[in-house]
Length: 502
Image 1 (tube, rainbow, N blue to C red):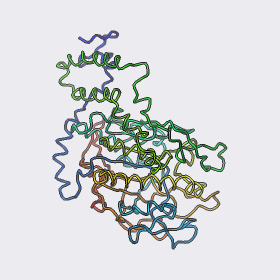
Image 2: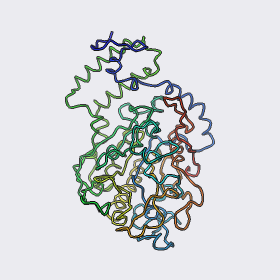
Image 3: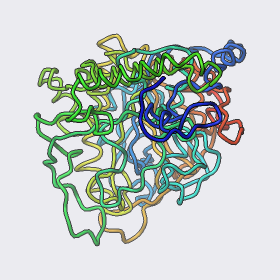
Image 4: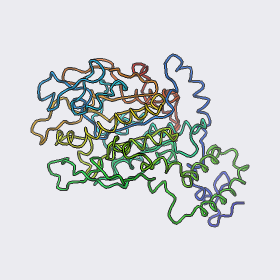
């Protein structure tokens, strides 16, 4: 028998409550019944993908999410012939792709547009900071949900679904988590750290949440103000940091300082006692995959592979500088290192820092100072370097890279805003995909002359999810069952978009 002391109160399956708590809780005891059937379900549905190219082409995915939402006019859908209140202060320049113009403030991006698919026709009905709407299959959205990360109405994050499905299929590098978030837990570095819904596993359980990192480098750049009423200025690491800055696993993923490897071994020995009781538990579906999950947890705590992948100091200084000595650039470099080490799904969030209101790419005020001094320069160093680096290392053909936000910004500048301002707009905005079977050098969709509405080929965030699953070899028609036995299609209403595929 297990040698736990304490309450002997038992549950209906014969396990006492303390045993379950000590082992880690019922939700963490391994593969669920639906996980055990996912592989068969995918094989059945796999024929749906036979007519579409590039199924399973991507071995890995890097999702880059500029929270707050960039303006299409100052990135990938400039309107040089529009009136000043639409076009704004920034002009358009040509790119390496004939007929494809970009903003003049991203000249390095102009040199790599032959590596990406530009989607100018992103659209959906919610001009909100709906991070969760963009990265999950949830069908509707309200602002209240954004402040409740664990609300039962949420659907699982795309990276959590990849982790969940790959677990069922037995895919992945045993020494690397399948689902990793950089540079830190979303919105944990602001004056309002409650707003962080979206990148969580929802009803799949916290075991499938991203493994988050943290970053210890100081901020060097005194960022432009976010709002007129802002009294404190912040040295934002997204504007610049020192070479000594390092990524490390967040405290939730680290081995506690007072727990030695020996003590972990003793705990593992204790859990081995549980294993000897497993014949009694053979009919409990949540126990079936317990061995693998325990091994993965212990590996993360004791192995150096993840820490080595995060150790950007192993890179030559010239490489680090090419990505940009700022947090976004160093995060993209860390993402490349993780993918190169065998990672499956890595998310890089350009997050708010210091003040949440109008933070990151949410440029209601001081739009042009922030775009010119902070946002576009950082993007223009890191993203092109990431694409070039992946290609030079032979990784771009098997790595899907996505640049996508929760919405766009108004086609017309809002009058009388200090430094200019564009508000939320979801009727038309831009996104990028690259690598792993996507169509390089292609423009998908077209907007009206002011950029405010989609003229053709509307694409939803759910379509991006479905296409991502397709490229990762996961059928987007799969359903997950929540605790109330309701089916949840993993891509929501999304469909695979052949326009994005080579």
